Image 1: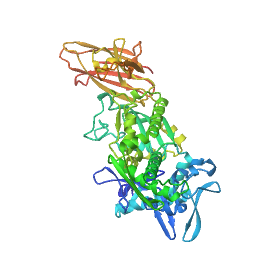
Image 2: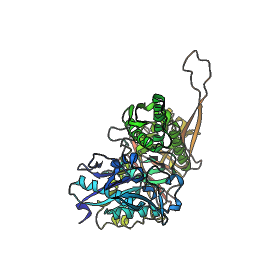
Image 3: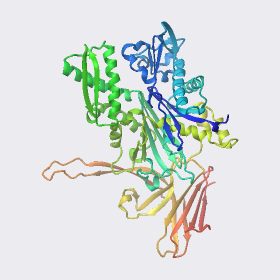
Image 4: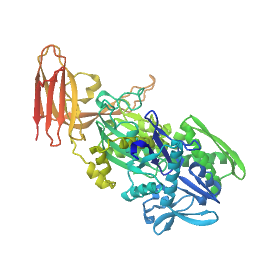
Amino acid sequence: MSEEQGAVIGINLGNTYGSIACINQHGRADVIANESGERQIATRIAFNGDQVYHGNEATPQLVRNAMNVIDNFVNLVGRPFDSLLEEEKARKSSPVLNKDNVPSFEVESHGEKKVLSAHDVLVRYIGVLYGAAKDFMSGVPIVGAVLSTPSWYTDAQNAAVFQAAQDAGLRVLQLVPASAAVLAAYGLTAPSAKGDLPAHPDGEQGVPYPADKVLDRNVVVVDFGGTSLDVSVYAARAGVYAQLAYTHDKTVGGRALDDVLVQYFAKEFAKKTKITIGEQDARAWAKLRNEAEITKRALSASNSAQCSVESLAEGVDFSGSVNRMRLNLLAAAVYQTAVADVQKAIEQAGLEPCQVDEVVLAGGASRLAGLAEQLSMLFPEDGNTHITYSIDSDQVIARGCAVYAQSLVHLPSQSAEREFVHSLPREKEALAKQLEVPATTRPVGLVLDDPKDESVAKQVVDGHLFVTLVPEHTAVPARRVVRLPVARGAEASLLRFAEGTPKVRVDFVKEEPLDDEDEEELEPVEVRTAYVCPEASRLVELVVPHSAEAKAITVHVVIETTGQVRIEARVDDSAEVAAQATLGA
């Protein structure tokens, strides 16, 4: 059977939840629901007598049967036991054991003790996802899958995930970083049939990118998952993405938000009933945590949510509520840490927030409005930074994996592209070397006289405005085309090309008092503006002759892998080159 004779799926293999996506009949990626109607399936397996519970069905077992529940096992696969941190071993469910230096779990099933390695549990879990996909496909064979893994995974961890998926019966087409799957889900890396890239991130009704940012943008992917935060900074250049920086923080995530809700509701329970939940009352804490997570999810869709627990402690029921504003106050420290991590990654990339064009959110915890609100404060109010989250953030990675899988199986058979993709190594260092391409180190663009336009006034340097045609970090060979208007009645135009240096301008703007009677002087507000400072020496000055009736000049800039720069100028729709120059090797 050929790959085209069946379906492919994408799997987001998270440490707290997993999900599956496929391409529907309309060619769009959809997340699959299991037989219980759940699209987010907890990475949890529980054993109780002769029963085995998987996914969300295993969650209630944490209350009465916690020692036979295995969860948070995905990140343990492919790692020796002695490499685990104490916080990774600590859990309220089945403890992590050392079995020949392999992270393992001991549970009781059918009246007997059995030891399962993290690998064994992952094989079972992937089998559950695979089974849900097969049920959904109703007999259509699944011929391949793409799975996501975090960028911080080692080669050993990726190899272990690959092997576990194969042991579960899946044919693995490729493992991809979660951030790459996010970009694929939005179609940002895939040109249309016309060769055009998306002009806006949020669908046809979304806010369009600024004209000069459709091809070339600096993009930050923020993956706020259940147990960690991953931030990746990319230079997006005409559909080719180069990673500039990456940070991973295990201290923040959806579980940290659960923690603040649990503590809040525990205090509310104590206020209402005068009963304090004891530290050793594991059952009460498990009940409250399960309900707090449900409350957190409800807050992503509504402004307030209830938390009700039957017989929470000493046989007393609890019912409380919380709204988004209260959660944002409770979780302020978590969000501030997340924003600081984003800022750290941007700095590692050699950028400032005002130089970021787009922030894409992923991970279930980012469905809450608090993260987007806090992130928006990091970027200038009058800037063009767009925060993108039109696809459900807990579905975007799985959808991207499905899109990725579909693109792989639709590569023409016997084509050089397919041969290249299948020949790529799985080891990270070897893969990076294989995919490494030369890139520009400085922007190349046009130097214009000050256009006296307020929208770009802060980008003018010594009476000149630099218009970037080919930004830094652009993979070469590269081509950019720009169409310039011609001054009315002119019979020639002078085009000045130069390299530039990206910089940030800092202005302090004095704010006006809100009240006329308020005599207190407000602190000036710092405003940062990104711009490019042109080099004093020009690469070339090109004189383009044309008639007085000419309306526009089309400029083609081509940079070869050798570093050679070719510039051609054509007048109006003419195919003839009116002026040209070749620079470098």
